[in-house]
Each structure stands twice: as C-alpha cells, then as structure tokens.
Image (tube, rainbow, N blue to C red):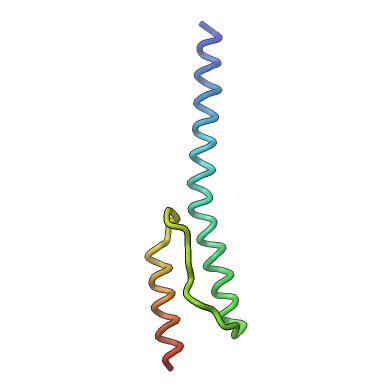
Length: 75
C-alpha cells in the first residue's frame, strides 16, 4: 500500500511540475519578448511587428502593441 501511495505521489509531482513549467513559459516568454521589443523601440532601433508563439498568453497585448507601433510610424 505504501508503494502505491509513493508511486501516485511521485507521478503527480512530475505531472504538476511539467504543466507548471509549460504555463510559466507561456507567461514569462511573452513578457520578456515584449520587454525587449519596447527597449528596442526606446533605443530608436528599427523594429518590425512583434511576434509571439501561437500558444503564448498576451496575444491581445501583442496585437495592441503592433497597432500602436503602426500608428506611431505614420506620424
């Protein structure tokens, strides 16, 4: 019985760790990408549209930033 409990605990921990890592990457990746993108804009570097991975969070923020950049380039 103790072995079954340990197997369930270990497998549950691995699964939770794996999905926690995936969710963290979907949050931190876009934040870092947006941060670097804004730094390039502040340094007057020529930047194209911001792109994020398909499954990342903050895709609506990416669209808003690209729209704002397009508007600023027109001025």
